Length: 212
Length: 193
Length: 219
Image: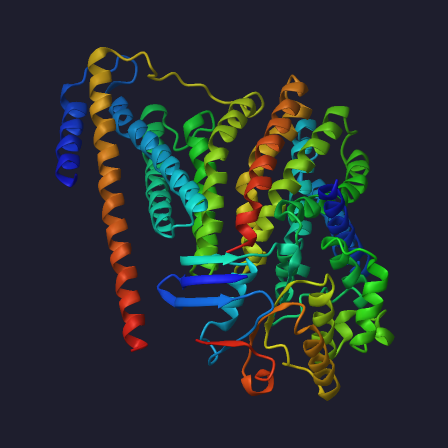
């Protein structure tokens, strides 16, 4: 299936670029650790256990923000994106390639963040891990297309957070709810719904973001 | 191969192209001339499919995989080497026997020795030559070249002259240029914007 | 349309203030309901209209739809802001607080406000042209999908955001109340329609003027 191979080639390109530059991933890992420590100081000692899960999610969202803002930087420089758009690959494959690559980065950062959270705050439940996995898909799917939109204009690093945060609020609800609400499965199902709906929308509309 | 009638491209209130008609047959070599800002680049972008006309009709009888576009920018990743860039494009364009083709092009444009250096370290002339490799990599039927000589040193100019002369019969060309004199011998048509 | 809007709106307000029966639980402050909910519904309608025009733009490539979509979103944002304001006033007069996280509509509109405010920032950062039109259109589509998803999220969130649940009028309105409500709703929609057509005409005129100026400059 050439579509899958195109996506793989594009994702591999992004991983190779990151391996060369070594900027984004170390920054994300350090950032998420620093944020968790900051939250530990910010939370009073007698605060409820439930409040801390919310902070984990905020830390994850902001770390994702950091990473995805940089998602289209290599293409933004001198319009390299045109090179990809010109090629016979499906434009949605460009989006999917970015999603796969950013998932890898976000996942790597979370491999550090979740144990750290377990260490600083409280141990991480299975439902939180599942929620993080599901949420990652939604974050990267939505983030990739919003990053492309922001990259097309000025002040893109300021703009991306503004675009991303409102759309990420449902993810926050789903994630925190899975840990703290009575019935995790409902929240996980909601996250899956979010992922499905927005991934399809992003997949179908990416073409219109990168062509004029 | 290309047929345009009443082509228009507007950016809000501003019209960059208005009422452009164009006919390029297979195997033709058409020059597009005009001052800066007259819309030469915009026209090429429309034909390449990067942008859609805001009015008028445009038919381009060629699929994306058969189209080569040399833009103002080289469209290569600065952090990757020449070979890595070309390998990526070879995969995206489903080029058969990529290794041979890449090697052949890098040699033709005298970049073989620099093939494992990051494109970011290349000089302006080398970048333009790498861009030409990228454009020709998949052996396209239709070549859209936007000021192909810009940035080239004397050696590069000779190499490009040779390429164009050799491919003149086997591909269709639409070339935007400041310097129509140079390409006049090859040209079969011209459009002034 | 403007005349119709004015007439219906005035009639609606008059009905709401004078004629509709007083609510047993909440007293006179409940009358804000006749303004607040129609404004909210009108905002949804504007966002929906904007998304429809956005879809048309992406489908046909006709640039006319860009201004239509933008104006609709603009109207939606104005009415959305009014929803937040009237909702806050209602909360204050009814329950003594300026804000309530238990109020689903209010929270939903807060999220939407953030989303559509970003719409304008996005548009502002992009250069004028078909590219901006397309990107704005895609964003407007995301917005309209966000509405039901956010609503679901808010309902789910109530389990752990400990809402203070207040009772208020819902669909169990008496006949007179319902009639008043419908009149107000119609009035609001007509108002939105009038403002929309007005702004659209103004923007089109502005565009035409600039086009003429461009044409003149090029001689």
